Length: 154
Image 1 (tube, rainbow, N blue to C red):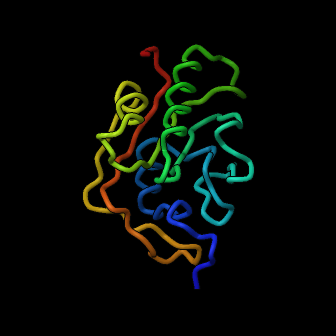
Image 2 (cartoon, one colour):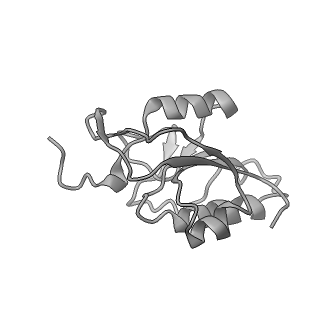
């Protein structure tokens, strides 16, 4: 049975998606938008922690709410740009990897994804997981991986 609080914004990323990203760039240090039972990193922030205001560090994973990814992509873009010359390891964001809806017609995509992130379009639609770890939902459209490395580009 699915709990009442489990909306599509709570859907968990399938492990094969994360495993492919770990193989591509190494393990994640921080999941900034997680639930304890679905986190993809040893350190994580929940909805109550509010990962939008907490510090990000290391290699960051983010599967933001598909209903409103705008604030999350803005944070990733600004954080990686502002930290391009950071040297303190406790403040250092190596990169941010985000699983996003392929909403290429939106303002947030054109303002905060295209100028800052490297993109990989995923084939087909992801089958997200429910709180029991079983496939539960598929978004209405495809998804993309957005990679925000630390860089000097505005």
